[in-house]
Length: 588
Ligand code: SF4
Picture 1: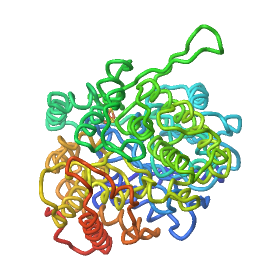
Picture 2: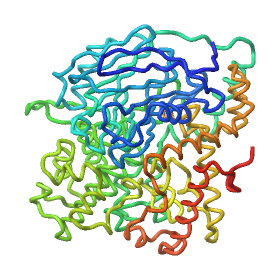
Picture 3: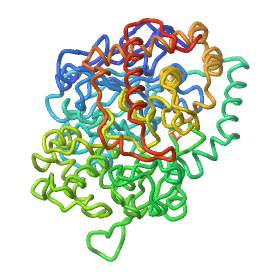
């Protein structure tokens, strides 16, 4: 049954206890991103460090989770080890549906377990189990053990960390159901700092679907749009790796630590090549008819015998960019092998790939030596990167421990800041131009998903600072509404504001449906208030020199245009956070 309040499970790892709590505010923040920010406002400790045991680790779903296709994501919010500020990361898999079936809109984890532990929750279940024997275990073995320990009746979702999380790497991710991740800004380290190796959500309850004709009719309509349109074609067939060839073709693919933006060798790691040579099957998040998850395979010799083990490895544009193009590894199977190695450590591949690309160039330039890198890193040499990934996850020496805290931190210490490809965090796989660079560098999550700056750059138009910033602010606001529901952003072409309002109305959220515009704007402000309240100053962001040297289809980056957008967007963010109305805000 629809309810206008939130039901949140709040767990204290120190005692192992917890209880569901009722929270008002559904019509103000909807859920997802909005609920996560609201919970951080309530439980977060802005003045204390990210690894203070009392800092919360928050997971939230939205009002439409479980009711419509592609409402499949969970929002994770935390104080990040990367910058010690408020952060958000999103993942799919079975995570959201499990929370829905467990009858929770959110999970707040506080405190620190006395011993390495695994937390399991369900609709009538809460347990903190001692799993000290899993500590130090890689992500694959951990997954195997947790699946055995928590038998999978119903909608079970397993979230786990690898050695990188245990070692508090700012690049540590939380793996979700093997092929999805809370990837960026170090949520895995937050679990590690809490002595939490795994979280298992047992979706062991049920929920009723709305009665009447409106809901099934709308569901069918939304489902048809998801599957009949070019969305299916775009995301199911080749998936996001199709972007590799497109970006390479328009000179907008970051290659070899962003020393170039196009290269004929990229043919070896194009989406078409992956699909032709490596693709085993597609997979999907729970409740998604699109199935954009592409699984390729790697094989390895079984204990030195003449037999082979085959492992399935998920790939997407971003992982291929980071483990392929940035490192100039141009063989699809080598990229998959590298992705497999990164997964084993529980690292975020985008951060790890970009960090190793910087380390390779620093080694070439003599800023680093093999005393630091331990392996002779060379662009194109997948084997050396496989070894380096292990050192990065394990924190083998001072250099890797520092690099694991962020490429720029290592560059500040050793030199080479000019060519550290960092836009708030290690860059995403687009070198489209000034608007994208600004969007990622200043965006709330430092993510390519904060706003579509990469698509704005690809429009053939004259530089327009006001137009670009207006676009970034509006697009962020529209995406915030989606991430408060919490929809997969691939569905943004279907879930416009009107469709979302109709969906809300059809399941009974009538008041919320009437004010989606107001909710989106207030969540946008709330999130920025959390970010600024934990120390972010958008005026202090600097974009490394390497980004000014980039050449795209439009020619060389325009440094003046980039600086002007940065300045104007920083002011727009401050205006949003101050709770003032701004002409850049979309109208209701
Ligand atoms: S389109 Fe892909 S990421 Fe989005 S919900 Fe479906 S399977 Fe998950």
